[in-house]
Length: 126
Image (cartoon, rainbow, N blue to C red; front, side, top):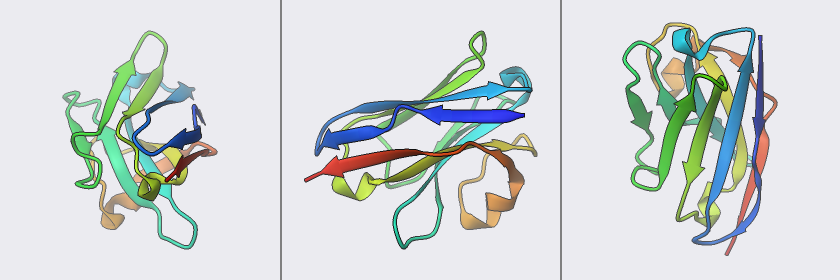
């Protein structure tokens, strides 16, 4: 099983980026995927999640209304569209598989994500 995250880069405050997470070894039809981020000196935090059970989505309060998660089952890829980016969104972004099938973004749910991608760096300049 492999997850490959990409799409990060340098963007100005208010700009947009679209991250991709290509999954291999698993079918997205049967896989819940979450996006997480970790800023320098801070703990990893959940950003968004899409559940395979009912295609429901979940967002951290800090990104609601600005980020959108989606998936293309044919391409086995999950996307994170990030709009109205802020300097505080600067972090390494990771995608991960949630083995329970349910979404949970709090730190108490981190253990439910077992396969992780390598991360892609997003830098938002002020």
